[in-house]
Every structure is written in C-alpha cells, then in structure tokens.
Length: 226
Image (cartoon, rainbow, N blue to C red):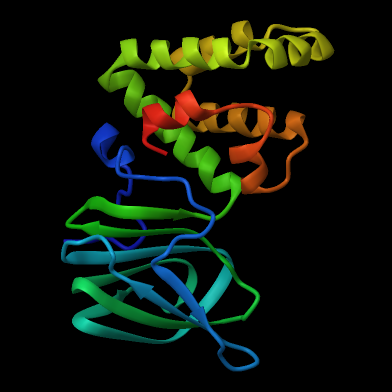
C-alpha cells in the first residue's frame, strides 16, 4: 500500500490545504535521552486515527528504537537514512516514541497521514522544506484554481508594494515582472529555486525570519494553507 521513498505527501491542492507552517508544533515533545541518542514523543493530536508518521531529517540518522502506544506502527524500509515512514494505525492521542542517532540531527519535516492524505498540523523545520512545499503548492493551485492564484499574488504585491519597490530598485529589475512568468509557467522545482533566491536576497537565515520578516507572505501562505 505504501512506498517508502515514493510516498506522496502532496496530492494536489486538497493535501496542501491541510498544512500549516510551524517551526515547533505541540505534537512533538523531546525528552532527555542518552549522550548519543535523541528521544522524542510524537503524539497523534489530529483527532482521527492515523496510518503513517512521515519524518525527514537534516542529515542521515539511524533509528535505534521506536515504540507505539495505543496502536501498532512499524518502520517501513531501512533504519538508516534521511526519510522514514512508520506505518500501521495509531488512535487519536496515541503516541510514537522514537530514538535516533546522532543526537545533533534535527527533523525538518514531519506529518501524520490518514491513508495518503496529510492530517493535522505539519512540522516544517527549515527554509528549504518551506521552499519545496511552496513550489509544490503553487503548481497545485495553478492547476486547481488559477483565478485564486492570481488574486493571491495581486494581494501579495499590493500589501508589499513599498518594500518590493525598494527591493526592485536595488536589484535593477521589477520583481513582479520577473516573478509572474515563473509562477505561471515553471515546474515546482523552478518555483522553489525562485523562492530560495528571493529569501537569499532578503538575507534571512531562519524559518522564523521568513514567516515574521519584512516581506509579508501571508496572502500566498493563506492560498496554500501554510
């Protein structure tokens, strides 16, 4: 039923709309582990039974132990890598306790799924992951509701008019004229690269700075449910 590396986390606009940006979420609780192992509890706060816990890390890790409570979940595939799917069933407010090495590795993306549909709040832990979801979401919105996509970008340019005018002047080009052809035609990877380029121009280095910085992405994140 599930494929470890090919499990689709974004199944069109419906799946995208279930996501929310959060550097920290209430269903992920770290515990003090050993000197070389991180120990974390993942609680199913979605309100429904879930079938998959999907985790992605910022570096290669080895899952050393996992224990489901109020359900049965098993690791699909190898215990060493950067991407993992625990599959089975976990009832509402059940928990998964997971240990991994090395201790310095961080989760950059986490999601509960019911069947193949994401449910509950998504953990987004890096700018790179946000850019990836942004690209996938824009393409899904473009295919599902292009009018809503255009309206969201009109609002984005209106709300950030003064800031974008100054940034465009410093770059010697109109960001609106450069951005819209990419948004309307480029594949998800191209939009992701453009997003990362703009973020780089802003000089931000953390997810919190992107979400709460000078450039207001609110209209676009609202369109994508982020």
